[in-house]
Structures are given as structure tokens and as C-alpha cells.
Amino acid sequence: MATLSSTVATLADWAKVLDPDGNTAKIVNLLSQKNQILEDMLFKEGNLPTGEQTTIMTGLPTVYFRLMNQGTPKSKMTSAQVVENAAMLSARSEVDVKLAELNGNVNAYRMSVAMAFIEAMNQKQADTMFYGSAANPEEYVGLSNRYSSLSAANAQNIIVGGGSGADNASIWLVGWGENTIHGVFPKGSKAGLDHQDLGIGDAFDSNNDRFRAYLDDWSWDNGLVVKDWRNAVRIPNIDVSDLVGLTGTQAITAATSIIKLMARAIDRIEDMSGNLSFYVNRTVASHLRIIGLDKSSSAVTIEPAINQFGKTIHELRFLGVPVRIVDRLTNAESLVS
Image (cartoon, rainbow, N blue to C red):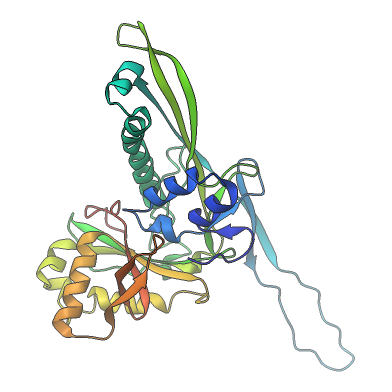
């Protein structure tokens, strides 16, 4: 994914700039294997030690027609300042020195243990990206809790899928950009997951007795900035049972079929020049492929592409927009009303 400016980049771009020894770049690649939103999401260094303060226009100035010899009343736009805080995600690992040495390759064994921590942090970030709640002050607010009500100001960018049961999924369309939606990390800190090797120190067992262990600290300070809500669209209330059977609300002829809702979503995006992608779980992705195969439609295509590892992949696209898989998107969401 290309860098948009000197300050807005993907995690992989930031890693190359900030950590020349290559360690962080390796971690970023590992993080991007399962939740593809982390490959696409653009990140900016915040203007605050805690995140980013943005100024959002809330109203246009009044303009007038005038006659000769008649003045023009003054007017002004209205604006509001919003602070988006970054959350501090952290973990600590302890590996018994003797256990690591039994493996024969201490570094390889420590890395195998660390992989579990890396994957856990990956999943937590992707989960929070969509489901983070203001009710949990240690988190940042995710997209689902920003696009959650059909009576809210941003309701025009919520296109409901017709489901009414308990097995509901969402499809997201997001246009990433410096002036639209992006991730943020605190001013003066690093982008992405940071690892500190604390060396060998004392650890404690369940009886509070000491043993020598390799100690590691993992941290990832990250937040979400929605500067212009018109550049994300949520398609909630997709009945998963109907989708699997391609029946009811998800029959091909239904007005709430996902391909019709996805087509409508594209036209709700304000700035089409951004990095635009759909985000779906594996169930939705699979049945979107099936719809494409059944109908032989050029709307749903599987095209050759190069991913960040330099490998050729076959990428699912809808009307030319990439469809990306996020495993943390569930099939059991609450209905949006």
C-alpha cells in the first residue's frame, strides 16, 4: 500500500522508517497475516502525547445574493474540536531460563513463545478497531459503536441488511486517508507493536517463589480517528442463515442482497480518492465468491495482485474495490436500529 504523505502511512511503511534493524518490520508482517485491515489502515503520528486533536467543520457559513448599493451580512462557519485518544495495549512474557536452554536454541524458543503474544495483540487491536466501546475507558472507540444508530447524524451511511434474528454480520466499506479516517499513535512514540527485551530477571511462581527467566515487554499504543464520517459505510443486520442458503433477505433477487447493498455503499463514500476497501468476515467473503461464480458476474471478480510479502495472490474485488477478510468480525452482532 502506497504512502499518502510524509506523515500518513501503513504500519509496514512506518516500521521501515522507524526501526532500521528490521525487527519491528518483521513483527508488523506477522501481525498482518489474519486481519487484513491492519495492512490497509493508514497511521499518523498524533499532535498530542495522548493521541490526536482534530477540528471538524459542523456548519457552513451563510451566503447571500445582493443588490447594487446593498451590503452583505457577515457570516462564518461553525466547527468543533475533537480529541481521539490512543489506547495502551500491553503484555509481559516470562520464559524460564532452564526451559529455554533445553530447547537448544534460546532465541528460537523465545520467539515461538512470543508468537502467542503477538497474535493475541493482533486480534485485540482488530477487535477493538470494530467493537471498542466508550464504556471501557482503557479502549478507543471502534467503528461499530460510531455507526450504531439509525437515528444518529451518520445514519445515512448505515445501510441495513434486513436481518431480524441473532445471527447478524456486518460489511464495512472504509476510505482511508489523512483527512478522512486513519489510525493514530501518540506524538513522539513509535507506530505499531513495540518489543522490549528486558533480559534475564527474577520471575515468581504461584507460591511467590523466585526463578530466573527471560523477560519481554510488548506494547502497542494505537487509536482511531474518524475525521469525516462520510468515508465509512456500515452494512449491518446481514442474516447469516439467509446468506448461507442464499434465501429470504439474502436471495439474489432480494433488495437486501449483499451485492445490492455493497453497490449502494460505494455511492455513500464522500472521497473516492482514498484507499478504499470492503471488510468482511470469512462467511461473507465465501458467499460473495459463490454469488460471483453462480452468476458469472463481472461485478464480483478474483484478480491477480501482489501482497506486502511480494507474493502473487488472487484478490476478491467487488466493482473494482478490494474485499478484505477480518476474522474478528463476528456473525453474532446485535441488530442496528
